[in-house]
Image 1 (spheres, protein in one colour):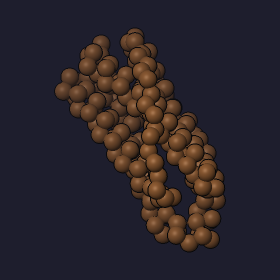
Image 2 (cartoon, protein in one colour):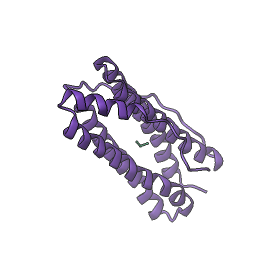
Image 3 (cartoon, protein in one colour):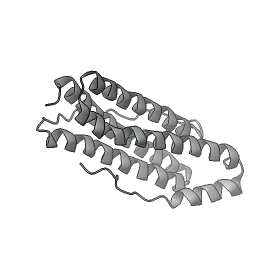
Image 4 (cartoon, helix red, strand yellow):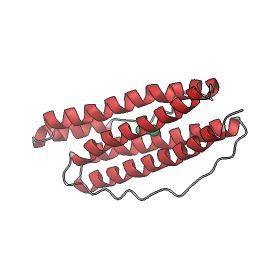
Length: 170
Ligand code: FEO
């Protein structure tokens, strides 16, 4: 049995993960217009990851016999002033998602809901990786983004990212 407070938070998390996919797709669109198809690819793959996260949370509710409540997904309304701006916003967004997952974790801990804690352990680790990747993108852009030739090479590198389904099986 999972407390209804946790079920509500997980339903909200499903919406946040789908919103993340929307946000990253919008960033991919920005880079497509800038002619940076490697950055576009990186964010398209990121959007796929977010949808996979949403589906894991959905599956967790279903496996435990709880109703999934799909709410409207907000518009990604961000405007970007330059090619670095989406990278900075992506890091801020991942920090927000980490805080959101930590909130569910804290509630589960307070309620001695060890099943949910075990499920969330994967996401805690995943958020560490997501923040590290976002920081890495900013660092690389600061090093190479201002020179046209090195920006071209960085764009080529990001073109190589492929979607790998999550390692978590539930
Ligand atoms: Fe699903 Fe990027 O956190």
